[in-house]
Length: 467
Length: 53
Picture 1 (cartoon, rainbow over the protein chains, first blue to last red):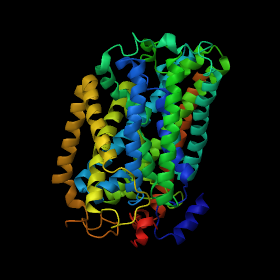
Picture 2 (picture 1 turned 90 degrees about the vertical axis):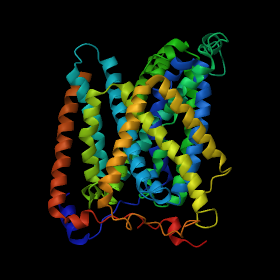
Picture 3 (picture 1 turned 30 degrees about the horizontal axis):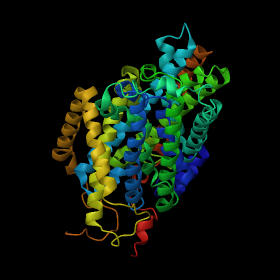
């Protein structure tokens, strides 16, 4: 390495992120971040509204995320820059919105990374037996966060190759479990008609379905993370729409299969309580092979998610530094590995601190809240994008159909989700909104004076309509 | 087994974190700050930069 560093020092005058990724890596990044949601999290929707509510939410929230994927694909195939939605907000809405969006991104991904590390440690603890102390629990958390940060530090290609493999294994485990429980033969292993009856399908009525929106987000939370790879894919206009839409299709199938397996094996009271719906489904089949497979797959899914989250949070932080929204020191790129190495290292102790002091429910809720704030922005963003630069004024890699219907659907579903979060976590929702308001004031009155205002707008677009 | 893995986890995470700090220090002392922070948004050959409508 030292020879490589020394020789590079002589020749490299300008360093940037490495453009090396393809559509498969984009898929691995998006699905990798999200798939852990099938292994834990979505099932708490059953606690809020029953098993049928979880299915309704699976598809309704699927609609929300399909809108997210379509909108994201259009805008990102045009604004291809690290930072993803941050770069979109900067060019389309303005600097203050961009700063907030970047904070949403960093919080959503860092808290999701923390949740994944806690989940892995909890899973290991449940199998470790006596003698597994708090020291050992934190040792698992430490190696997950630091080990994956080191992988990210070392290079994006290896990081997302690893993500592709472990995400594919975790997804295949769901498929294998599905066929192992003989879904064509209800009554043999699966007992859907006994678990979900007209009496218990919606135990709290339709208000339970609304409340279930909070956890339904977990089916797909993070698919929009594909856009963070925009500056590192060889062909953003092709790879990002392909990777994102393929990821969304993969997840819709995976979510439906997951619901069917779990709903057919567990009563809603247990399904809404357990942290490990798919692992428990493996256990309930009575097969040690399936149980061990789902145990390994749970850990792999959480690892893939944490890995992708570190990648995305670091890119968002790096982009803020590059535009001087934060000190430009954070915008350094490693001259050999071509990664935003200072941002990656800086976020490690923050993730460790949260993982050591927070519990899983708090971390997940912070992540969900930041995510929903972010989706709300996206619905406004696409409206402004189409108004300022109508079709035909700039070239788009992908043009999403039925505009403005997806944006309206997205905004409406976000409003319902805020209400659902308020029902369960009103104090946290208020606290986070206050936090973002304070950060906005800090940016407006203090930090923005350091920003080189002309330099931050980099897209060679014509003037927007009406300006 | 899990207890051993957790103990190894502490050692490995400490080693990896120290490696990152060491590499960070070495890079920062080998290259100028101007080189390290020379990345600019919009320098990629993205679709929109051909910009012919």
